[in-house]
Length: 554
View: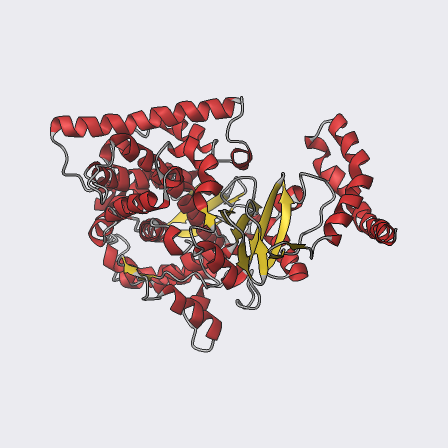
């Protein structure tokens, strides 16, 4: 009886907290829900308050094997905190962290999501034992329909590690060096579309298209680049529409987007299969691209990588790298448009390295001598990490931070939250690239940079050592066995594109001023900027497009 009374009192307290926000919530979503659903929602509020109270009352409960993480209360059963989290995930996670600490669980569409935040949380997820947590079980329903069977998360972890090794072989320092003039030429050629000495252009669309052009030319071969016409662009679009949050919740639905995704996946795989067949038939097998590396790859047991596996890996490489690079490039150029002083300093740095000659072409070694450019990209990745959450499915109960996370939960880290931590970064929401250059009196930044150059599990691709530590407040490319192998290429691609744009344009600003800086769009799996992003520009008088570089770009 006493317990019932306490629960009723707690329900009343919850209702007092929830009801004041109800009109705002209803107004926010009324245009997107049917009247019947809205009535059902309103009718459910009293019961939801009791549900929240019960959830809150059990937040410190224990299982037979140990103490469970705190559970975030919710007032809509099954949906749980999905709407609150989905609308503003990073802010919401930071708020829950203040209330519950670095580990907590919340319900999202019937799934129990346990977040572990901070450096220790990053380590628990990214370097967790394979027997305890599984990336394959977390992501396969999302990635298999897009990438295809028997690759990435649709195979065992040891096989996936071998497949990553194949791709990495195509990203050697020698290959990266050869990619710089190709990316520069593609960039110069693309921005002839922004006509005139002065004008306006839409940034997000430009960098999305340019990124896929540069990636295809460097990694996939001339055949793929030459086929980037409207039909292939449509295939990519249809595949991309299968990479949305709804696809994480529902692997198969009788919807047009799902059908178009499946058709596009088959056609894209056939495209790569035809290219491989033609290369062998014509003897053109001496190519400097990842596709050729995959064509020649053998597993450690002597089994050859099949053509269909190679085709599916190429789709994975295309899809995984496209959004992250184009999004980071768009955010970086947006930050530069909002900070003309940084843009000017970057131009000065580049001009000095070019020997005062704006028409001089870029090269691999020159890009390595641009510390401010490197800092701008690092700061962009800190503030606008393309992926805000990393998930694993808990296979067996695992103890973390003094709590036991049950099997069946999704264990999640959010390096993006760590990268905005005010305890680590001074003025964390401000774009301050120079924080990466002068770390003499900043112990936290020194620690982060040491983690980045951890020699224990490191490889040098020519742009510095890639560390293996996961206990860090800066992990834009992840860590551990699932660290992004495309990081070296991403840096080459981004540095070349941004340096080319800084060399090409004397001014680069928002049409509507600094207040037009884009907001974050959390409606997709990648945190993209809201569109359109209109830029007004002025070209430099001595543009590379007026000289030999224009010929190379054509």
